[in-house]
Image (cartoon, rainbow, N blue to C red; front, side, top):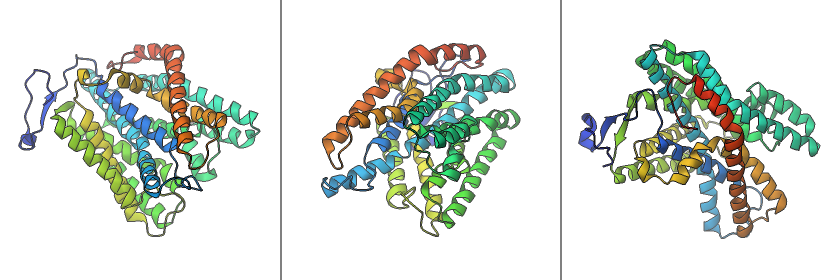
Length: 399
C-alpha cells in the first residue's frame, strides 16, 4: 500500500482493502504530480488516434489482417483520450473551487476567469493564427476565415456540427471551445450550490447528455455530430465533478495490484464501448443506435474515472519525472501535435500499409511536438502563468 507515514482514515471500503487519507499538501495549495502523468496519457492517446491508421481506404492493404485489426482497435480506443482530458479537467477545476470556497467562504469568479484566460487564451489564439496563416498559404482561406471566427468566439465545436470539418491544420482546437463553455458555468455552480446540490447538478448534466445521445442516435446522426456536441461532452465533465465530490478532498491508498486492476477495468470499459456498443464508429450511425450510444458513453466515462483513481495518490518518487514534465506541458502538446503531424506527413508522404513509414512519421511528429511544446512553455506560456499566480487563491501547479 502506498502511504506517506500518516494514519489513514478508514471507511466502509476497508472491507475491499481500500482506505482514504486526507490531502497531505500544505494548506492553500493543491498540486498532485501524478495527475500530470494522467494528462500526458490523455494527450498520448489523442496523438495515437491521429497517427494510427483509422481503417479507412487502403491503409491496411499491405498489413497482416490480425495486425490491422489490432492497430485499428488501439486507434479507436485512443479516441477516448479526449474524454479523459474532459473528466480530469472537471475533477481538478471542481476540487480547486471547492478548496477556495472552504478556505475563503466564497468563490471569486472574476479571479477564476482571469486565471483561465491567462492559461488558455494566449496559446489558443496563437494556434488559431497559425492555422489561419497555413490555410491562406494553401489557398483554403475562405472556409478557414469562417472556422476561425467561430473558434474565436469559442464555438469551434458547433462549426463541425453545422458546417462540417473545415480541413484546417489546427482544427483539433475545437475541443478547447467545449472546455471554455464548461468554464462559463463551473464557478457559479460551485459558488451557489452545496455539495449535495452540486452532485444533483452533475447528475442532471448526465441526464441531459443521455437525452441528447438518445435523440442523436435515433436520428442516425453522423458520429462527428455526436462527438463534438457540447451537451454530450458535458456528461464527461459531470463524471469528473461526481468523482471530486465523492472523494471529498481525499486520495485513495491502494496497493499496486489494486491500481493495476483499476487500469485493467478501465481499459475493459473502453474496449466494450468500442467492440460491443460500437461507440463513435466512422460514418453515419444506424437507426435506433440510441441505447448503445448511451451505454457506450457511460462506459467511457466510467473508464476515465477509473484511470484517474488508479493514479491518484501515487507518491511522486514512484513516478517517472519526464512524464510529470510532459504532463505539465500537455496543453502545448495538444495544441501543436496536429501541426507536427502535418509537417511530418508533408516531408514524408505516408505510404498506405507501409508500417515503417507510419512509425517513422509518428516518431518524428511526437519529437517535433515535444520540442514545440517545450519552447512554447518556456518562452511563451510561462510569462502568462506567472501573471496567473497573482490571481490564484489555492496554489496549484508550479511554473
